[in-house]
Length: 265
Image: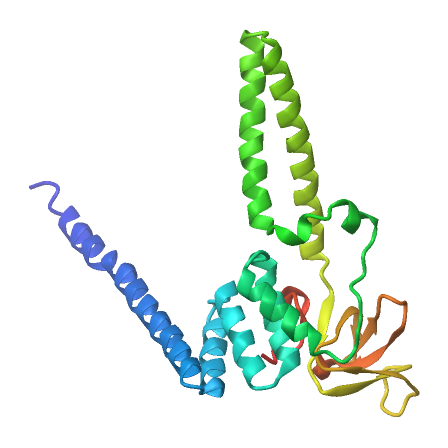
């Protein structure tokens, strides 16, 4: 019985380790209850209650694209076009080929008063397929091609068949294209300063002060580029090089990682 001192340790471990799994099950159950409750409220036409449930899930860390999509539907039914487009755009980042999302997003964009075309540079046109794939999909494609490339190279060391040479070249080309695409997608995701106008109509000013000259006006749902933030004001620009200042509360960045203002969804 010289190992009797281990018994309290064993009892402690067997008592403690089931706790996290039980806690996780309770947390999952609570998450599902809120989610299905919000969906039920939406189906009954209680859109404000549904939006409240979806927002609660997002604030608690369940910021998954399907919840953002449902949140956008709720806002759209409440005639809050700006917040609907904001939620749709956030969902579109990780599920860009979802047919229902793309249809609803296109329909919402058609309701926007300001016809602002998206800015397209050389790399956006050269890598035209990037909007149709997510960053995680490109990552896994690159990982698989990386494995195939080194496998083909290893086989090539022991066998000099002509078809292996052409296979290696094909995989190498795909590996380079996918790697460049992944890099471009990463840059886009980490340099996304697009913001959505949330108010019905806002005046873009020449400076970050009330009473400054009004340069032009924007309307709910318009997507602009934010350059910087200063004292509660945000400097924005449009693809046609127009620039001006807006109060920080009237717009929100699509990528929440860059938005240091209080969340308004």
